[in-house]
Image (tube, rainbow, N blue to C red; front, side, top):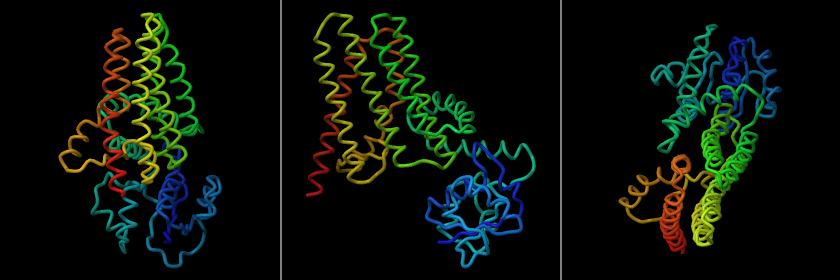
Length: 349
């Protein structure tokens, strides 16, 4: 499937917005959809230099298009969802087809500073629409967008952010297990920062169109590791503070419940090839009522809500309440996910 892109003004096509030239963002999205790209036009040669800068020379060629299924103009910024629509419908006149679609999906490029701001706003709006959970849209994303707006213009990669955030999470877990309340406050602030920064890697990956399966799994594994470390810090710190092995025993039991939930989710994601995000997990319960019920409860199982409850609990120093709340929540979640797992095995037979 060949897509032709006409470059009449290379300076506009090379316009850098949120860490990536407009033309390169379009090309990357099209390549992910399985398209081969041909650049043509009076300034295509000048714009083609970008192809080498981003190591895309094997997927993009320079010259006259032969039989393109789509001909686009590099004088526009296209939302990824718009490119998907155009590839699917393959209109004869792309510009006419665009006029019938919402304006937030495209933007004519002009030599005006406000145009860059408009496109930035549209790109962040696209990311915001994908935000899930109870706390993230209201709090986390407001801060992470500020960080992303700065980081996306640097050379730092999403995987590097995930790694640095993993280190931050491990340090925060050690602070949470400390006997001193003031130290635990620092740990609570650390896990809040970890939850906020956790969104930056995915945001940058989407803005720069550089996400990968390895990166997605790295992010998921790092999140689950840190979450369990936070829980371990809770019951280990409580056990040492109260000088009781009782909380160690039930804490490790709760950890087993938590790991069993993770195992069920990973099993489905791997066997059904659904990706690397827990949001892709669907329970195997029969009946629409069950599924509607699970979707209503799912936000309470999200990481942003878990971190928010932990932070408030550690600040208020109600660790005993947090301990039993986490234990009961892990027990209920493990039971529900076990039912889903065995139903999945039964359905396969």
